[in-house]
Image (tube, rainbow, N blue to C red):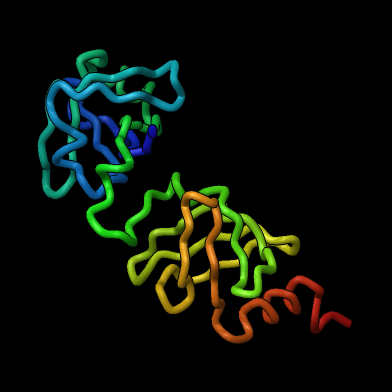
Length: 179
């Protein structure tokens, strides 16, 4: 499965290095010299890593196909994807990649569908599930208390939203308080 592992940021220096927004838990495995990464948009790659180094906590990559600062600026904001064997990826039973979750049906324990998962927001305190429902977006903390079951095989996530969350969402969408 192709997974987004990073995004090309600003050029660094004049020799074609780029800052990288890392989107993987395994940067030391994904960003090694010689690794060939698929790109999105596809027309900007594939790109082969020629060098990788840390600069004050920021990953800097140089690609064999990109020779200078101007060329890096042309591929800025390009997503970097790696082909990952999902069966070897998860170190723990409850680890998932965002790409595995996107598009899953989100249901209550009763089986009532409340929407489809559109994103997982990585926030400092915890991750949030972004669910597109009939009345807009619903955000639910991605913790075991509120998300007791994730069934990747059947593309289904069971949630127990905090009390009042869905009712609050319904009243805010219906214009409660408007005269």
